[in-house]
Image 1 (cartoon, helix red, strand yellow):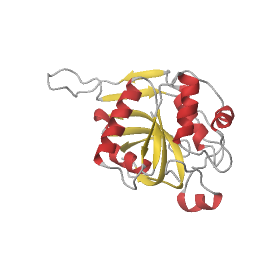
Image 2 (cartoon, helix red, strand yellow):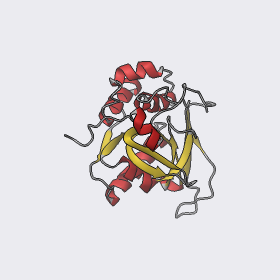
Image 3 (spheres, one colour):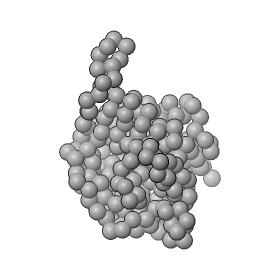
Image 4 (cartoon, helix red, strand yellow):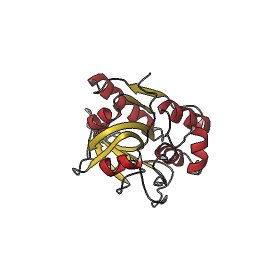
Length: 219
C-alpha cells in the first residue's frame, strides 16, 4: 500500500491515550480578513532590504472539528476559508469521501481544494519514517510559495510533536491540520489544529516535516 493512502482518525479508545483527533462542538474563532497579512519584521536580505518573507500569516476562519473523524473536513475547510469559500464541514466531508474511518489521504484534500479554488494545489509525500533534509527543504519552499499566494497548506500527520511552548500534540491514529503562517523564512510554522484545545500554535519546520513523515500534504 502506498504510504500516503492511510486513513486519519482516532478511535474513542485511542483518544484516552493520545488526546487525539476529537473536539467538542464546532466553534468559530474570531476570523481574520481573508488573504495574506505580511507582518513587520526586522529581518533583512543580503542587500540590507527588508525581507518580506520573514513572517506571514494568512487570514482564516477557524472551526474545531465536531467529532473524532472530521479532522480532514475541518482542516480543509480552514484552508478554504482563507480563499473566501464558506462551505460547511459536512459539505467538505461529502466531497472528501470522509467516513467514520476517516479521510483517505492528502490526495483527497488536494483534489477537493483544487475543485474549489482553481487547481493550484499539489500533493507532496514524505514517504520515509523521518523527513530527509531535502524533504524538509521542499516543505519549506512549498509553505513559502503557498502562504505567500494566500493558500494555507493542509498536512496529514501521525504521531506526537511538541510545539514551541513545549506542549505535545499526539495523534497516533493520524490527523489533518492546516499550516497558516510562518516566521523566519519558515523556520517556524503556524499550525491551525482543529482538534487542539489551543486552536493555533507554533512549531519548528523540522518537527512539522517529521510529523508528516509516511504521509503527505497539500500545498
